[in-house]
Length: 405
Image 1 (tube, rainbow, N blue to C red):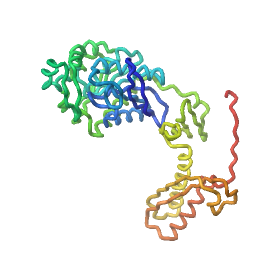
Image 2 (spheres, helix red, strand yellow):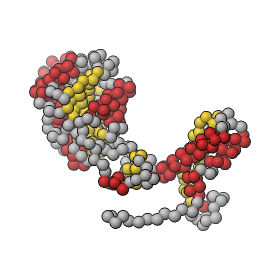
Image 3 (tube, rainbow, N blue to C red):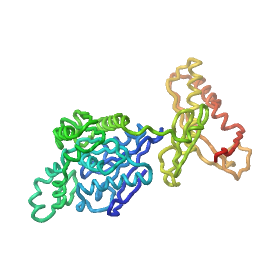
């Protein structure tokens, strides 16, 4: 879900909130991206989604003047990045829940270490390829330092883009003291770094780890590059953080709406907006609507789920029938399209021709050495699947209000 929130100066920062899709949200996390990067960096996306798969919602955002956020990057610095993180935490606390986990990549790792000191809700901090001191970034401007000192600023090209770096930026880096911050962190710390990182050497990880007090852990990212540009590296990093953080995060409270859910019962719950959590016989699902109609597009629509019921039941029915007959059916794919059609266009309809009917078009792909008679028979069997019969039968729906409503 895309959103914006104001930083301490009132500048609107662009953000993306990733939420778990198939389970309740256990905790919220903040992700801080690398220097001059954005929230949409491939590694940031992969790490965030690995966390959501473990039940951790993640807010990642663009620092001031970067990506889709407002503001001028030239007026930002390391301290303003830390302030932006605190503002993001305040937004989460007000709109959802206080963040319990901070994750930072590269300079973002140094930023989350500083921000944690200001956020009482944070229980764990994870850094990836982080410098032991923000001043490490100065090496990117070595060829421009004389110009910055003489003119007060310089145009510096980084990662294919041109940025204005002012003297205040360098002075702010010099003023940031990491050792004291790390030694007084008082949170669980996970340090992740690749020994082959040529941008921020692994010695930085050793400095952070040595300065920190227990509980602390180190995980090698092996031969990953600094930006974790390979999917396998960012997936591994995200999965590792999720597994590690689970030990320190609060136990997820059981949502009250699940108390009345039992076997063979489906329950749906929505607290705000159209996103709806569904418990179907012990399995969590999510339903939503497209953004065009006011939803957040985090899951299939109710009609998508209805079509999915027909498709899955058809596939299962064909598989069971072919197995029983010992026919060489190797693979079944069922695609279902849903439309509203005028009754007059439906030859089998006996209803008022001015009305619209729901029409499901089912396309079945059968793979295997089946003869024409077997294929024809399987088509007949498809029409006998239980969901198909339910949809074509007379249906009665009884509605009642619970006593505590």
